[in-house]
Image (cartoon, rainbow, N blue to C red):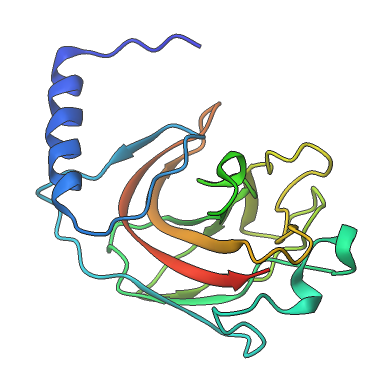
Length: 192
């Protein structure tokens, strides 16, 4: 795929990249699909995310929420979100195995949830299937290659660290889809 970058767009991208570098502790952006940083003049608050389901504690991945290979029937964890940018159209969840680099940065799949309003929650999307519900969609399949969609923690209990990068974005239904990250946060799912 070839991309043509206009000089003015390149300057904006460089300026946005410099502004993004100044934000401390910002989680990495998944490599797929293409994303742009928000305009540094946008007013960005602190986005927060918390588990809705009490089975998730951010320390240990619940036994039922691992991949089918290890006896689980996982789905994406439901998250309550607050403080995301007012221009947000979609919340993206990029699932990561931080211990295993090939599956980090969205390697366990990227899913999207269309939202509106000042407070939102993400639903639970079934794992290891290509079935989506109204308003929810798969942005990128997991990189494991054996099953489609979101792949739950699947290390076999070796203590890998799993997380999700939660991104508030503007969204364009192009092919491939493109988005602009407005603000983001990281949530540790736990170890498995």
